[in-house]
Image (cartoon, rainbow, N blue to C red; front, side, top):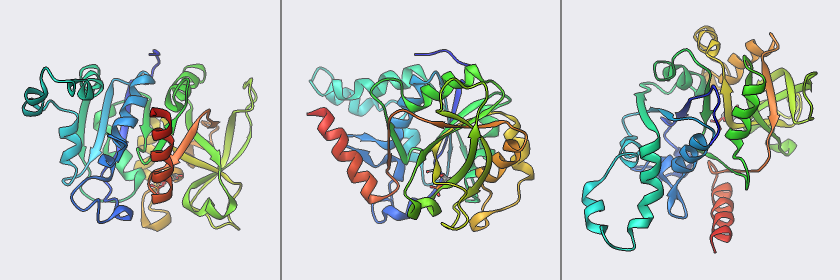
Length: 281
Ligand code: G1P
């Protein structure tokens, strides 16, 4: 466990998950399991490891299962008491004990930027992390968010976004960044963002360096989001708000250590399932 200035992690989890219908008709997509653990729990574990103890969830009225998952369930606990199955709930119970879970409802789906802005009352006026649980990250040593909160401690006052190279044909699925070297950086993994475009065409894309669902943000982003007009798809985009701060030299891109699975797609979900299965046996 590390100690940083980043104490809260925001989870924008209000979306419908329509790509996974019919599975997501009555179950939040964040509750779909990789093996026996729901996606959201992987995200919460990563946030806790990174030093975040407040899990701030931006939900909607269809996401009650997420709240229930991070609460006690006395009936189940009593029924497995004294049996070997107790161990199955222990890691989750440890998480519940170590973190506080706060929830706010996003009443309209107006984009990721709007979801993050909705979480403002849960986060307050401090730097905070954002995890998109669809992007499942794994590293054998420090998790991706822990790598980023450690970097924030070295470069306070900057937003940091995790990036990785994607094939050209996939650039239209992501926020794409243009970077230059970051003078005070000792490794080539941390870069300064000079431009960023949400889901560009191949022709418009300034590079093939894509933002993945891990961010460390400074509270200034909220005021910027309030002024950010709808962008791609008519939605308020975090990428557009970050561009405003990038123009002031305040946004860094980090090429993280580890693997990321796009569990928002069936292929990525199956890949993650196979990867974690191989690790467990
Ligand atoms: C969001 C962001 C995008 C980012 C992506 C990472 O898009 O808007 O910039 O690259 O997450 O997963 P979404 O996948 O929610 O459409």
